[in-house]
Length: 89
Image (tube, rainbow, N blue to C red; front, side):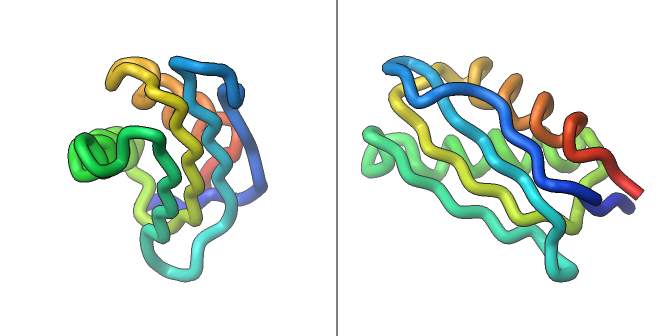
């Protein structure tokens, strides 16, 4: 499938948004999540991120997400934007 070729970001640290940073992986998906709602929604956020990565065909990525209470659709959009900016080989 695809691997990210350069570091890229999307989003902000503002309330109700998410900051996403992607970079070249080490042969797998390495997902780091920091969220103000991680106790309640951490697994749902991770599932949404993996869904977007699967749709984009990306399986070799290091991805860091700092969530400030963003809706699911916002998180998905930020992940997709960062992946597209990071390019794939």
